[in-house]
Length: 314
Ligand code: ARG
Ligand code: MN
Ligand code: MN
View 1 (tube, rainbow, N blue to C red):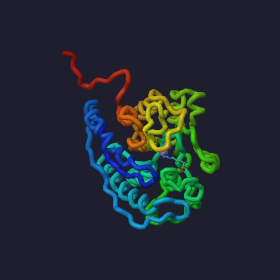
View 2: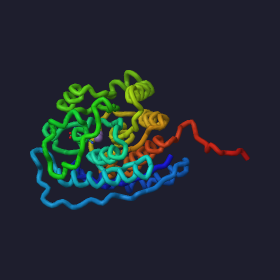
View 3: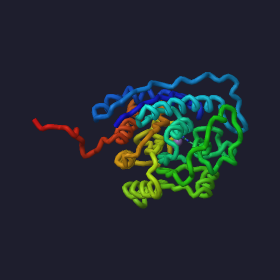
View 4: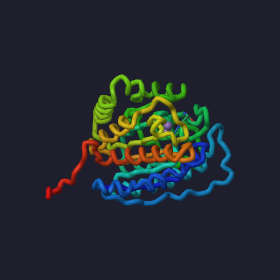
């Protein structure tokens, strides 16, 4: 695997401080070294820098639209460059509003993606349905072709070109979906494996069906957008919007192992790690280490063990 890492230390898609520390914490937990040790070629592109936006007044209900629009435009260019260099892109957030730039930059290099969105939340509110006005609860709405007639003009958002079809999206792990979001998911017929389906089918069947679904016509590159709050808060408590009843560590890892084995993983987001939301050092390290392990699972690490193809027994 050839991996390109981009940090996006950005938090203005939601109100809580600390999530901008995610990229450097995940690196400090040894991400690059661990990926190299499992045989990956890794290039760390460092952190994207974001412009200060003065007078970022809400537009209707939507908070900090100019800062979020501008940050995502820069991230999009950075992800596009990593893809053009031929790597699988790993975007370390930051809050989940960054999926706008990550998916947009990925689509600019690879047009026609499928998106696997692993999250407690659907993050598909439009600016007009959002109960909170936080853009981290809205990123999918800006990207889906079928929703564009419902998206008002926002400052610094005009560069966004919708790039994903509703039929190319699978959600896994949902358990906190707003009524307006639920309506959108049903209206567009989007494939959802909520925690109910994870309970009913088991994670192995969920992943088998997920891949059957996204590969049913052509094999498109996969964008995996992984919100750490998909995992149960007993494993990843250091996040802004934890929700009880989440994926176990094993289910979370299984998703990455399965996606890795498709050979089609083209970009990964790992978002919403917020050390300031951990109450103890253990809560923080458990969350950060889970993020690192999930990324390792994306790049071939197997729980059965691995060995290099050219290994010679002494
Ligand atoms: N649905 C809520 C909202 O629209 C919560 C979203 C949480 N999103 C997240 N990326 N953690 O604000
Ligand atoms: Mn979430
Ligand atoms: Mn999310």
